[in-house]
Image 1 (tube, one colour):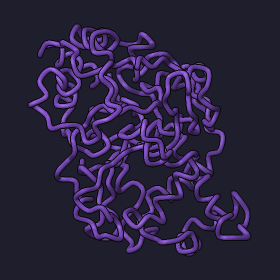
Image 2 (cartoon, helix red, strand yellow):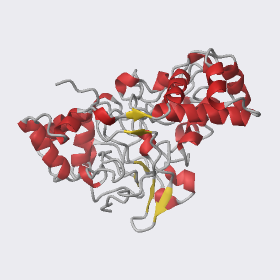
Image 3 (cartoon, one colour):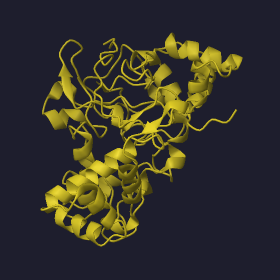
Length: 365
C-alpha cells in the first residue's frame, strides 16, 4: 500500500506555541509548561517512589529510554510491559485516531498501538499502570500531587479541583503543555538548518536524502511534506503498518506474572489490531517520527534491533534473504510494497544512515 500524505491540512491545532522559526517561538502558557516539567521529572509520583516520566523518556535520547533498554522497567523492580518506550518528542502532533478508508489504515492516536485516542488520556495511563508507575488508581496519584512542592502552583494556575478526576485533568493538561513546548519539540536538527539554507549537507548526506526520497521509499510513510499548519516536516504520516518485525525472544514481558501477562511466552503483540478488534490490522503499529532516530535506540515496538544499521539492512533485504531474519511475529498484513527488497547497495545503506543522523536535535554548527 503506497500511503499518501493524508495528514496534510488535517493535523489539528494542538500546539500551544507559535514556532514558524526559532526566533518567533512564543510560549503562550509559561506557567503550565513549568508545572508540567516539574511533574514530568518528579520521581515521587510512582509506587514505590523513584520512577518519573523522564526515567523512560529522557531529553538526551530524544525523550526515549536513556538506558536504551529493549523494554523499560517499571517502578516495581522486575516489572515490564510488552512494548518499547518510544521517543515522545514531536508526539503531540499526532491527531486523535481516525480511520482513513481510502488507504485502509488508522491515522493518529497515542502509544505505538494507538490505544489512547487523545494526548491527555495517554498522559494519565502511565501513572496507574502496574508496569509503569504503579499507582493503581487516580486517587493515589492525586494524593501525591497534593503533597508535592508545586501543588500550590497548580492551585494558582487551575484553581482547586473539586474531585480527584478534575485535579488529574489539571496534571494531564500541564504535562501536555510541557510536551508541547519547544524544549520537547525544538526543530533544531541539522536537517532543519539545511532546510532553511543556513548550512550545507555533505555529499554523503545529500546522497542519503536522495535515497530516503527515492530508492529507499522511506518518504512514503516518513513524509517530507511540511505540515500545512506549521510548515514543519514531521517525518511521519501517523499511519499504521506491519513491517514484519520478528519476535524479540529477549522481551522480558514473556516472563511476567500471569496477572500482567496471562499468555506467558505465547504472547503475540497484535498492535492496533487488538485495540480496534479487527484482524486486518493485526501486527500494525503507528509509524513513528524519525526525528532523533539516531539517538533513540533500540528500534521497533519490541526493541529488537539495536542499531540503525540493522534497521536499514532489514528494510532493504528482508524479503531477499529471509534466512537472515526470523519470521515476522505477525504473519498477516505484512507490508511488502514499501520495504523488503529495496535493492540498495551497502554504500547506499551507509548513506541513508548518515542522512538519518541529521535528524537529531540540538545540532551545533
